[in-house]
Image 1 (cartoon, rainbow, N blue to C red):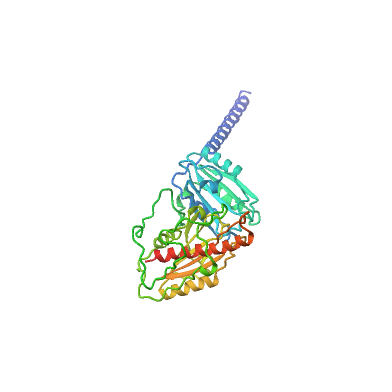
Image 2: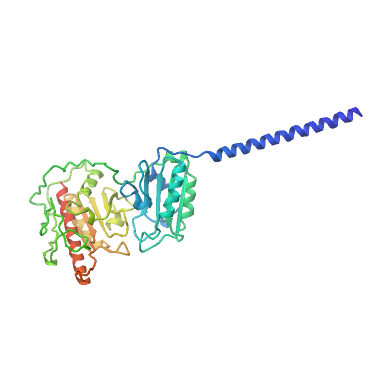
Length: 410
């Protein structure tokens, strides 16, 4: 009897020990899970442009728009994020080059995860899914990953939203550390581009053709314009007959140095709008064109030896584009300028179109200018008069840009 009792007691003790072990193991798992949930990644060294590009992983190229990333400054921050800028915030906007596509990704890196959550909620609440005017986003999401907030505005038609959101949610410190981007993303606040021509007087050789515009000095164009309040342009009024045609630069022995880099094109692009009141121009950005984007912007086939940039508005619904290409020879640049103008599509923006399309060349550089100045009818300006003024001022702006190009190319 004692033997049987001892066996039963031993069995009961074993069951008790197993139960305690299971309970302890379970508590350990719960504790680990709870601790893991409480851990929030704080990303310090982040290439936000590269992060934005990575969000399209898993989406075929022919199923997504051609997009570009741009670093946001204190001046353009609110335009893309829909919230006021605060010191210490870093942000990029990733949007299509075509204004007819309702799609935008905005990433903001905040100091803390809590601040990121506030920013994501505010961006979603204040955003305008109709900012493209002709199209509208029907998906709007404000989400966070650690101290990075994302505003996503897109359409269900493309089917990209789920993939982008999943890619964003799956980011971690290890993935972010591997992401680096070569995308040109604009000019930071207070950044100054060194300009070797800044203090030099503009000189032109006999073979260089600079168009003399009526009442416009290329070096110091006055901010003169029409007196009506709603006229956006600052160029003087001229008749269609008075607008000169841009002549072609004759062949010359002068050649652009072989050490020309993409920075040279950025410097030229930075001089294009001299003499034009900034208030009458949209917010501009300059992007390097590569094998994928070149033909869309220049309307001619890409060559691996080309260097090219495009100066364009950050808001895609504005019909304006300036493409500068460094070719292999002066003869090729002359042909390139002619071909770009012949093949250009002034209606590529779909909802709006460029009123003026011009091209020119100097040395081994060619330029294509497509732009439009819109004069709105008022009590003092009839619709017919506004149309005429719009065409004239568009021609004036294009000619002035080409003059600045010819003066900048050495």
